[in-house]
Structure formats: structure tokens, C-alpha cells
Image (tube, rainbow, N blue to C red; front, side, top):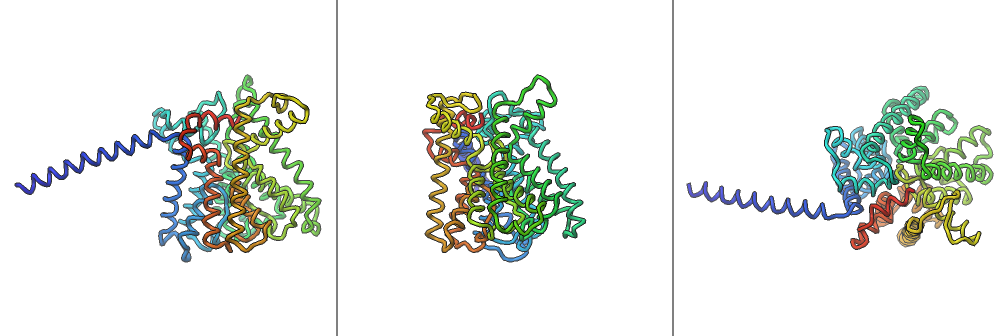
Length: 460
């Protein structure tokens, strides 16, 4: 009887203590700012992904933990860089885990859980809405609940259409497991992840118009962002709805990068001159598209490109995609602000304008801060890799820009990286996905009071 009483007392104390710990963790979690919650969320998905890929039935061959970590962060950040062959190193389960990770990384890990909450008829908490705004940089006037539903619906419809188109081409070309390959590449393209089940990415399909155009459209739809997709959808459905200034800027800058760089790539790349004219156009379009959308696929060997062509791709990777999209980079909206600063300064005007639209001072400051931090991380990454790797300098710049921009293109040195080099690139990919500015807010607690507002300014 005494033993039972003692056991009951111990269990009661344990229950009371566990509730105190749970309450403490809950309170500390709610005390975190949106940028900190966003960073912690991506970190938790990284830990879960590494644990799943480390399971024996997830691997075809032995894979080191650092390689699993590298590939998981690459998937969550929708980068596409890999230190091992995906098809040769992982089983179907491992490939499915990677697909799930870059799908979550593409649409945002908060989107899935928020969609489930809304589907159950429950409202979103203020904390969840704050994290969502910090992650997607929504402009004013966007209803979060409707936006979340549209993200999931748009993603499923677009990826399904893309998979159907790719399946027919893959099957006719004799690709092994054409349906799975079509689904994998469709999701990877729309998430701008750049992961491929082929060791040479899409080089075998460099002459296929269907593959080039399908992958290109999927990547552009993912890169321009869900803000633009919803904006265009509402404009088509409701005559009174007009496309916002944000969407116009995104579409113009995205098109401008392709229009300017594609002819330069065609003119400067010697390896294209032996191809038929239509294959040259496919190759130039595909590689500039892959760099500017940060999708990371390649239809020609990147390691054989000239220095001029690599420079064009680096510029496109640094510019990157758009806010609320699946890509990385400094973002097209930040570039528009920088162009506005340059134009207004050259004209001797104090007001910063772009397309005759005045940009508020706090948005200018945010864009400048974001671009400055981005270039600072890029410079630091190149410097550190120069210390650990014995590779050509331009290749190190290219690899760092690809990792920070969550692009995934490589000149072929990823698999040759030393262990310190893998850790450096893993950190850079994580920073690129979360965003240097968001990570800065997360680390500088005193500056986090205006995180949600400031992040939203990047999009407008």
C-alpha cells in the first residue's frame, strides 16, 4: 500500500513538472517573433528530413550524414545541389522524402498546416498569420485564408498538368518509370528545386521542345510567385479587380532578364555554335530561365560553358525570382527599387520612383538592406570556400551564388567538396531559403518588432 502511494505521489509530481515544462515551452514559443518562428520551422524540418533519409530502407548505397544533411537542406531550400546521385543513392522512399521536402520548401511549410486548419473550419491564429506574412511577404489587401487555399489549389493543378505533359514525352523516350519521373520533375520544376532523377539533369532532352517548354513554364509560374498567380486569377474572374503594381513589376523584371540575357548567351557561348538553330534557342532559353527562376535544371553541361556565359548565369542567379514565389535571389522587387534609386539619382531627383510610381523611404531602406546583406553573405561564402577548396575561383563564385540563390546549377564541383566546404554551402543554402534579412531579424531580437511589416514591404 505504501509503495502504491509513493508511486502515485511520484506520478503526480512528474505530471505537474511536465505541465510546467510544457507551459514554459509554449510560452517561449509564443514569445518568438515571426522571423524566429520561420527560422525554427525550417530547422525542425531539416532535422526530420535527415532522420528519414538516414533510415536503412531510404538508401540504396551508404550515404554519410553530412551528405544527407546537405541534400535535405538543398531540398527544403529548393536549391537542387547534391553531393551524391539521387537516383543511385536513394530508394523510392528516399526520393519521395526529398520530393515532399522540396514541395514543402516551395509552397512554404506553414501553408500545408494552415490549409489543414482552414479545411477543418478553424480560424488561423495571429501568430500563424504573422509567420505566414513574414514568409510570403504579402502586400496589403491580400486575405491570408483565401491566399492559402489558392496556393494549394494552384500548385496541385499546375503540377498535375505538368506531370501529364512530361509523362507522354518521357514514355516515348523510354525513360525508366516515366510516371514517377514525370511527377518528380514536375513538382521539382514548379518548386524551382532543380532536383532530377537523371545524373545529367535534363541534358538528354536538350532538343525536346515539349520538355524545354513544359519545364520552363512550370519554373516561371513558380518563380513569379503566388501573389501574381492569384492577382491574375482574380483579374480574370472579376472585372473590377486590377493587377497590382507589385505584379506588374514582377512580370516586367522577370521578362527583362530573359530578353536581355538570352541573346547575349546565344552570342557569347561557343559550345552552342555547332548545334542546329532551334536547339541553340532551346539551350539559351533554358539556361537563362533556369538561372533567373533559380530552378537549377540544365540542358547543356554547365562545366563546359565559357567564362562570359557563367557570368551571365551568375547575374541571373543573384537577381533571382520574386517574393511569395518558390525561388531565391535578392528578388525582382528589390532590383526594381535599386533601379529606381539609380534612375532617380542620375536624373537628380530626391524622390525614388519606378514606372512613375513613388517608392516610400522605408521600402527603399528595406530593399537596400536586403541587397547589402545578400551580397555580404555571398562575399563571405566565396571567401570561406576559397580557404577550404582547391578549385577555380570562378567555379567557387558560381557554386556560392547558386547555393545562396537556391538555384542548384553547378559546374560539377559539388561532389568534390571537402567536409568543411559542404558545411559552408549547407549554411549558405539555409540562409538563402530563410532570407538574409529575415535571418538577421531572427538573430537580432531587438529589431524584430517590425518584422512582419518590413518583410511585407519587400513585395510592394
